[in-house]
Image 1 (cartoon, helix red, strand yellow):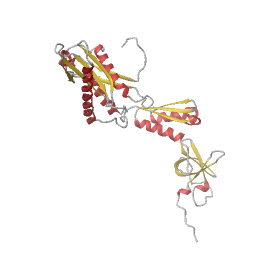
Image 2: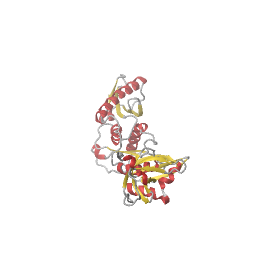
Image 3: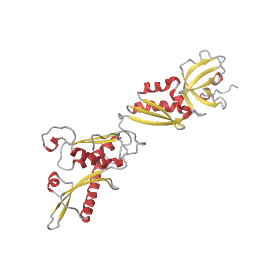
Image 4: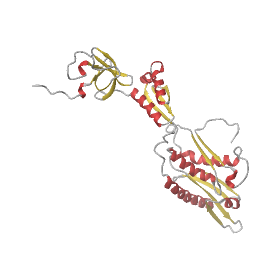
Length: 341
């Protein structure tokens, strides 16, 4: 509306109306009043149905390129924009449709006819251009241009009721193509995810000198932002696609997950000592696999039993209440040999 206005917006709708859409030969320069006005109407029609920012933090941009026009292209923008949002996986509250109503009247006799979905000639030669948009539950936006002195309440009421029936008919046709938003975004769409973690686990995700978070970013290709908000930690992940997001969030969830006694884990031997081996069974979490918990048979020493880097299936059998150290066992997952008579 103003060349000097500054600000930010999470939703944009760009409406383009090139000359060739009506058979004209004119240069395509910056947007004129028509493009701005029609774009704003479609913007106001769709915006109330968009999800809240905390549920859908993305910036949304709808581009409507009008390729041919002999009717209301702004109402077509509303319908097509709604279909595009649902196909993209944006969880809108309800689909929105729009229709342009017209009127032919005779001032001398008082007779009139309300027209639905007017053509270009009906707009040019008629007495009213009344655009109405909304969902099944109500109107989201409207705009009226009239060439008469005014409209009676009865005429306006009839036009709105006829527009409601037209909108619902169009919504029915739209739902034949797609009836609700897709459950998820497109596989190659950028991803955004927020994980709230306990404050004391922020350091575990960052790692010494940022080692852990840098490894997560390098392996996944995602960007990880960690901040402290009040008494909680917040990890925000930005990823180029779903695969990258799954890799990053999987590693973060594994770090902040709390080990549970009785659960089985796949671990990696980090070091071997005379009395057993230290096994990392979750990212950043190691426990002692005592020599007596490796096999049912008695082992005299650790020579040739386990090697550093070897994968081993273990069970968490206990956590020391004072030190918090983890006690692991491998033998409880192995068949117990029968006692010889």
